[in-house]
Structure formats: C-alpha cells, structure tokens
Image 1 (cartoon, rainbow, N blue to C red):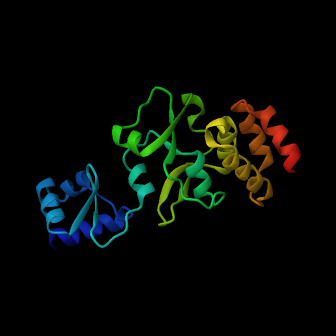
Image 2 (cartoon, rainbow, N blue to C red):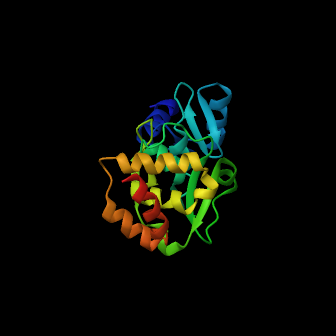
Length: 197
C-alpha cells in the first residue's frame, strides 16, 4: 500500500482529517506530508492537520481535534442544534477557567470561560453539517449560556434562541430549570419564559 492510500484510510477514520502524529505512526514523515502538499495531493489546513486535496474541510472537527479542553457553545451550539440558521462568523467555545486554548484556537474562536466544576454540565456530542461528532453543550445548557452572555450575543440572537427553544418539541424545562439554578440565571430565565410560554 502506498502512502497516499494509507493517508486515505487515516482520513476516512478521522472525518477527513489527517493528523501528522497519526501519519507518523504509519511511517509517513512530515517531510512526505509537505511534499504531498507541494504536489497538490494534500492540503494543509492548520499546523499538524491536513486533508486530501479533493476533500472538503470540516472546520468544526478540525478545531475540536486540536484540544480536549473546550466545548462548542453559544452561537456555534445554537447552529449545531438547528436553533440558528446562520453559520457563525466566528466559532464559539467554552473552556474551564485557568485552561488557555492554543494560540491558533484563540485566533479562530470566541472563547468564554467557566468555573471548572460547571464545565462538564450539559456536555454532549453533536454532528457537524459534515456528519462528524464534536463536543457541544446540550440545548438547555446552551440556552443558559445565552442568558449569561446576553449582552455579548446581541439582543436579536438571544431572543431568537429563546423563542425557538420555547417552541421546540425537544425542550426539557425541568433540566433547563436545574441548569439555570446551577449557572445562577434562574431569575432572568423566568422573566423571559413567562413572556414566551
């Protein structure tokens, strides 16, 4: 099997992304990866990550593979849940306080920080538009995050998220109330939901 066939297998296993560390396990050096980029067989998407030249990049998967220290949240979570029809201009992540994502992630994403004990609350996995699973907060946590950050999100995005959540058949008001208490937004949530429900 030649190296390109091996890279195709790696890409297939990893949602289209070839990580240089994984390629090295199969005896494919960084020099070979660079040569394949020059020959237009591969395309470098960021440091240490490549895709086959004829593949489309799954940006969310690419970002999520760079670190386990964050979860997609806020506008990006709304998009992944189908609550927002707009692809965010800048992806939004949440990281535990005291953990700083890499410079590349900082340049690509808007970052919110949360106490480490609340970081895992509502964490799940959702499919990207390309069909790959990425870490994301569930719908109720996302609504609470939007309430916590309503001044930064913008009124239109915030109110649209609440209206669509209130109309969603998937909503779990008991879970929402539990999260709102833990994230200290229960009073604000009640004010908005009294109007919407």
